[in-house]
Amino acid sequence: MRFQTELVPATLIRRYKRFLADIRLPDGREVTAHCPNPGSMMGLADEGLRVWVEPNDDPKKKLKYGLRLVEVAGATVVVDTGIANRVIKEALEAGEMAGLEGDVRAEVKYGENSRADFLITQNGGKIWVEVKSVTLSREAGLAEFPDSKTARGAKHLGELSARVGEGDRAVMLYLVSRTDCDRFRPAADIDPIYAAAEQAARAAGVEVMVCHIQASPQAITLDPTRICIM
Image 1 (tube, one colour):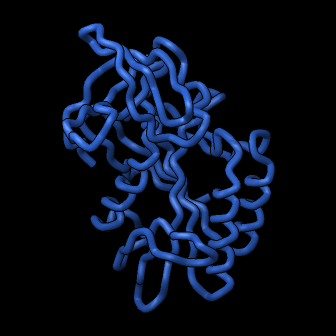
Image 2 (image 1 turned 90 degrees about the vertical axis):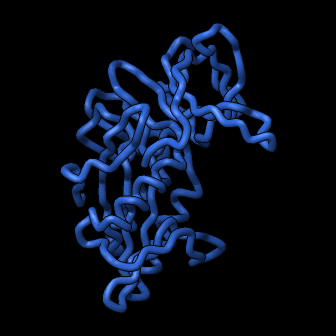
């Protein structure tokens, strides 16, 4: 996935109200950027961090910059959680994910007022896929999810389990959206309900897949050499 507009480096001043971030541009101007991340951004919202923002000239948008990347301790972290689905969609459509080939549809209604990130139709069968962007790391080399409590995430795991009960395949896909981690685990201390829901989903037959990104200010892509089933 290539960025449509060249990213601009900036310095983070503060992140607040979940979806806002004040930044300092290279010319010294201080502006407010859209921060498309509903989580806590633990460890990624400290004043002074180098960030990358995407400018826009859309007259309908009040905020003229969107926060995309944060650099921390030598790592690049994709903090725009919407990018994860775009990266996975490109990889699925390109046939880069073994076992998940087929016709790909996004945002498909299922369960109780839910939408699956992807539905793959494969040889007459269905594969339901939920994608989560993983940005938290509290231990060197270890990525964790979630970074804050997520009732919605636990609900998705229940919906996937129900699909398995109907005879379909279901996949919980964690995209490690940072370049410094090679391991993953649920953050049970942050959200024990989510961690329990994941264990229950595994027991019900939901497959858990962990993938990693390759990242730069020019493009974010799936690393095809780092896809594993847990």
